[in-house]
Image (cartoon, rainbow, N blue to C red):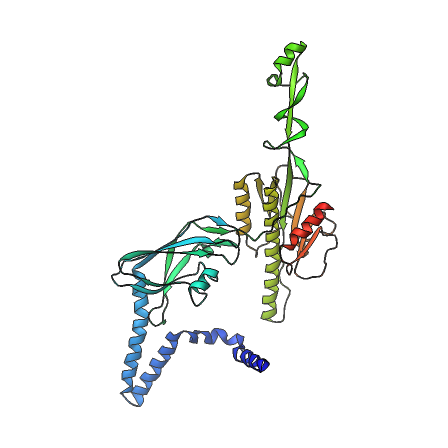
Length: 416
């Protein structure tokens, strides 16, 4: 019986003619159904019975009220969206505030916020559909503030496309009147990341000004000892007490700055899809390629965040953009913002990128199978299947694996 009910449900909900959807989907709007009813009743009243024209007048009144009232209501409404924070990690809530001002003396009913925060957990909790966040009533001649905790479904900048709208279709749902919302600031949701607690043993060390080694001699850190003056030494380093005691110039030796320097390269290309027999297969291909690109971005974000947390000097190379994270929190914010707003539909390749300055010898490349270079060391390859397409990959990760598995693989390669 359960199988029979499932088969019946699938048969009743199946789309047997998807190519005809664009011709019949307009019938989902009740406005057009009522309009057809008005035309039919007017035709019957003209040729059969004039009393049917009373029904035509009633239907016209319903259509007029259902279209004019939402339009008039939105003319007196102005809205503003604000965020309490500028950026949040993926999965964490952010408080969003919506100020609604109603200039009309009559209340506005059925107002909802759409096109900026769709498909969110907050929207699903506050309304019966996933079209937006609904508000029951805004009193006349008043300003109301609504706030909710928004959890973004994916990385990116919100509101989507930098704009949001409020709409109402009260009272009959025949016509949706919309008005653009003024957005103050924006919310950037970082990609999902996983903590990588180890560092590869072969990471390069280079000089910086705020981290020092007790095994190398330099000019900035704590004093390591003294030695005889050499030609070219600065007089500021002369140790005058020892000079007076030894009757010859003695200078101090200090620590040399030292840190771990790593460059993370995000290198993936969206190759054109091969000719496929059906639109459904083409859609599946686009979905798979998008998942691979998203996984590459998550891996690159995890590397930048974890290496920065371990006081590394991190550089992020995205196409022809070189973002120097360094040791500052502001540098990490810039890199994560760039990864959060990166468009997966574009080609992100470093094949022709040229950058000034010395490149760190320790480079980790995050790429997909199409851009993988056989034999290149420290290459994290993301694939869309379980098959091993590059046996020389330093780390091989597929989209079916959860991101947390990267931590165990990373720990293993760091200790090898």
